[in-house]
Image (cartoon, rainbow, N blue to C red; front, side):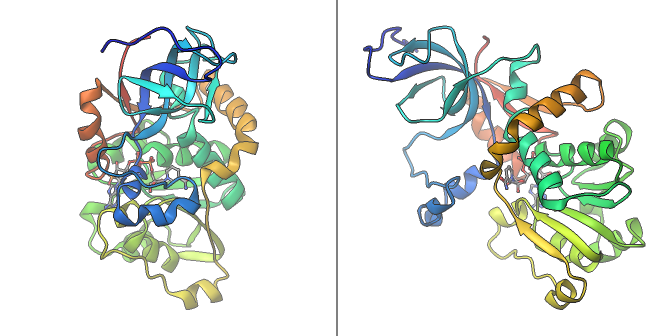
Length: 319
Ligand code: NDP
């Protein structure tokens, strides 16, 4: 692709060569016909057929009409699922220091996935040492970090994932106390009773539907549920969680939804803590990187089949 390296000064337009783009489940909700009615939620503005798709990513400035950016600057922000992005004024973009860590970390562990796990666990669930934590989609981008943060904090952590390779990874490499393959279980309520005979203090919900019902049935009194996402409901309109609300009332369970964009105030804390953990070898960055812009569609579709292990990223180009 031929790209001009000149932009008229004062236009504030920045042209970015895309290096890494984030592949996220929520994009599917933007593609649904009802998504424009959700635009008030800020992160689900609709995408219509034929329009480009913007996503969190890392790139390098190749031309700038904005005095804040120079050719050669590394940036992180909203770029497109494509080779280059013409970033118009007002679009979220910032320079960053890679801090000696791989650039791809800005899209996953040091980006929104990491912040989602950190804010959801610590701000929403408010764990106490020794508490029992259950996390679903635990080998995914957010889930694996929830488990790793919770273990470092001193909790007992069990995760669910969709195949035995993922279960082994959680237990043997990421330090989870236990894990199970939910696809091999026929009665999730009984399964969770087996893993948490005394009940769950915290459930970090990434999937919704029957897993949320089963978790609520196994919560202890004053348990907390972080409603992070409901991926099992994104592509199946028949699936809806129906927890026993009398259980919620009598057990005084707190179920709280949240959006990562509301937690930018804890970003610097999160960044410092996570970089320290990474440098001390206390936390692992789990990445699943495909190469080339042409791999974006299969990378995206794969999220809904459980193809990814860890943060799904597409590397578009070398720096
Ligand atoms: P993941 O990296 O976890 O990828 C998705 C994973 O979900 C798959 O690998 C698959 O793993 C699992 N999955 C897919 N379909 C189903 C299904 N039908 N039932 C159960 N599990 C399924 O994605 P993220 O970590 O990026 O996102 C996890 C959740 O967090 C999503 O719901 C997402 O929308 C939400 N989210 C919310 C944010 C917020 O601000 N509230 C911010 C970021 C993400 P498996 O093999 O285990 O089935």
